[in-house]
Length: 202
Image (cartoon, rainbow, N blue to C red; front, top):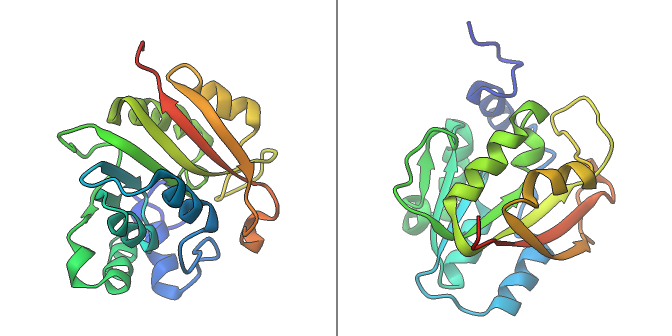
């Protein structure tokens, strides 16, 4: 029997979106992503995957920069909210499904992370990094924000720099890491924006 207090289940997140208890919700596009898109320039038809898209603000930002966006979340309430935020034109970019099980049918030039990893129990982190390594094409990029800190009851679950490196360094090269300057109170000053390049030799 599924428990509503089990954060691995969609009901856990849907209950929070339905009641507005979403302290991780940025209510817009983070500064670090806007700066990344400005540096990257327009990427017409480049594909980007957004796991655990939540309210979906970043979908519009990527689409405006020319990316072909695929976003996924398994909370029906989160997707209803995202579709209201985005409007009819972009609503079709969101898939209601389990990130770990859904067949995307392709690889992506880019994957974007924000609050999905820290929403997962640490026992699922390795599965997450392995899945991303398969979904990002060789030479592609993994970019986004990570909450660094010591182990704590969650969600959200902070991750150490050492653990983060252990998850990704075998398949990705870290090319940029900077402190996030507009973190929400939930994350204090522990967030880092990081950019990784998918290795071509593994």
